[in-house]
Image (cartoon, rainbow, N blue to C red):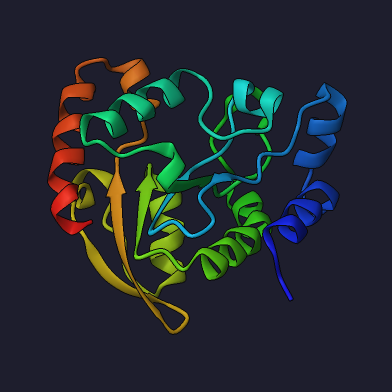
Length: 192
């Protein structure tokens, strides 16, 4: 029987792609995810950054501070959600996830979704949104067009709402986006 403990062990032992070698070389930690194991809301980012790889916890750096601010703006608390990424290890130089890496890590995310059974999945950024949409048999039209809308989907036999949003890291490069992101978080509350 699967469990969160087993997923963490499997992430730690994973040899499906070269990211493990990078983790070991830099003495980083894998970032399997954390939060409420019975959460109705699952938040899926793209990949751990430096702070996350150092701590083993998702969204700890600048993007994490922005995510916390966005969540606080709608009275959403970390203790009530589960947060993870598609990739469980940091890509070198904080580059974008590669397709083969996503394919390697995707089974861990699938297992997390099956165990949590969320009612809604907030998909932060193009990579997470595209992967989960495709996994659910839906076409993804890009984050700019799809953001802040709820898409009814099935993950296995379970119904789930997929809600794409800009990744909080985008506001670290373009501070003007933060206001739009707060507005998007307010919009999605009616779907949650």
